[in-house]
Length: 423
Image 1 (cartoon, rainbow, N blue to C red):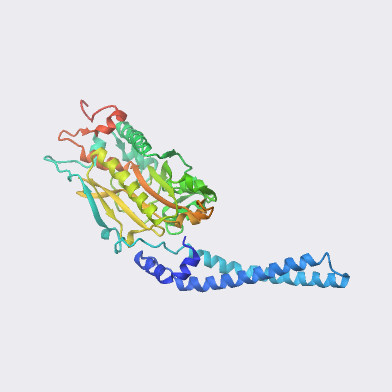
Image 2 (image 1 turned 90 degrees about the vertical axis):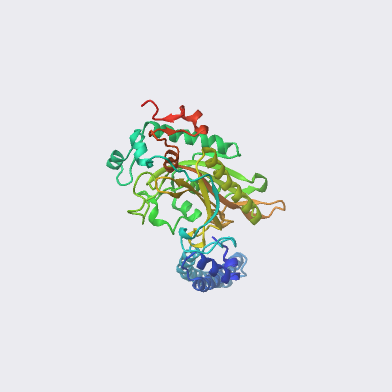
């Protein structure tokens, strides 16, 4: 959430941000509503101050007539205050609704564009895997080795359901354990957060109201998270930290749930797009400095790139265009893995920074060296999601005989070098 004072003073800049992000919002209306809000609140403050003054005079009134006159004035002020409070309610409701739609300002380096098709490649690593034999996709490979069961998964869960079995489950555990060790060496504190959260947490991260169709909610109006970023960011809500605590580095691990609304018929084969999965997420808080945010953003994304490189999977990194940025993001990178079966790159990670957009909503502040209270800056980046990583892993490391070689760094956690050898 942007500060309303900043919005009023930089209205043209905010309009440009909305245009670049393809977000429709009537900012002129917001300014008008804000004028009404400020006017009514000013009247209320004056009347409450007058009410206090009159109240303080009643005990010291010179006689009963003067006391009754003050009481009458108090009653009249009370009625006027109630009227203004009622008038403020719809104004404040509209103001809050509009404020929640205001986008953050994208960085100058963010390219123009309408969708992910306009994202720009900034890095490639590794050669796109090619085979001298007829290669299989991950579905064929994993079914061949009894690593997954989609039929029974659909029977139990429904559309996009799956079971990971045997080496499919063991390989997933190996990835989790290796990721915990890899990112742990970078100073992250591991966190297993709640996966059922109050609605306010999704407003805090900016997933609501814009992604309302893509989240699961309970009969009690609580929500299932689609990323541990949501509940990890809520950890310090309404707290004041000390600058000496920065950077705060959390490594969240949780099941995640997404309805994949609007994607019916898209990526329905295999493990590319499923309703429930597990994800390890890097979440970071730092001081309110653009330079600090930029440096930590690059660091977080590099962490994931180095993790993928250690597995030996070819990838590319793209910078997201304005139309593919979320409402709160200042800048975002996507890391995309090479999928031989489709002869294309598929997103595996997103790294974003938000300045104080999220922390204003969560009310996460810190005290700087001079004692001044400021809002922290927040960032996040996917460490690794499962089972999606299995798609590229098994396809890139398949052999002509149908076996799958396990990347060397995973072997201590998996317990063997090849899936399918001797079977």
